[in-house]
Image 1 (cartoon, helix red, strand yellow):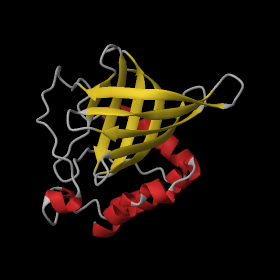
Image 2 (image 1 turned 60 degrees about the horizontal axis):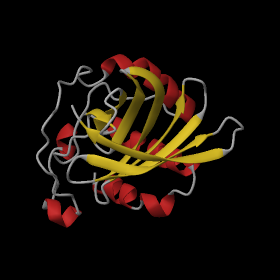
Image 3 (image 1 turned 135 degrees about the vertical axis):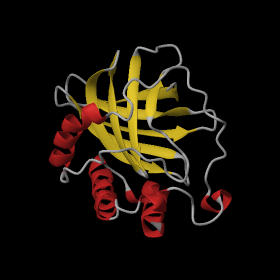
Length: 198
C-alpha cells in the first residue's frame, strides 16, 4: 500500500494529460484488484495521519440519506467505461481510505438537483454525474490523500470526454476545474464547486 500511496502522491508531477491520468489509474487498479482480499490495508494509516499529510476533516453531517447506498446499480455502466479505458475491473463495494470516506452525493451549494455520486475504493474513485440522480457522465480517477486532491477522467453519454481536478477542503467542499469539449470539439474549462450532502 505504501508504494501505491507514494505513486499517487506524485500525481501532479506525473500527469500532464488525460492519458497520463488513465495510465496511473490503470496502475492503481492493477494493485487494488490484486490486493482486494486485504481491505484492512486501507483502514488505518500505517503511521500517524499527520505524517501522511492527511487532512484534519470536520465531522461530516449528512443533509439527506444516501439513496444509492454505494452505487452498485451503476456498476454495469462504470465497467463499460473502465473497459474502454483499458481495465474493466470496478470494485463491487466501497471503502474509505484511512478513514476518509468520499462515497456519497456531492452537489453545488445552490443546486441540489445537479448531483455527482462518488464511489470510493481506497484511492480509486468512480464518478457518476447527472440531474436528479439520472446519470449523464461516468468517470474513474484517483484520490491523492496527501494533497487532498481528486483527479477524474471520463465520458458523457454522448461520448464527449471530460477531465476534472479538485481540491478537497476540511468542510467537505471540493473546488477545482473541469475541462470539457465545446460544440466545436475544442477544450473549454469550467469551474467545479460542490459539497458532500449524503
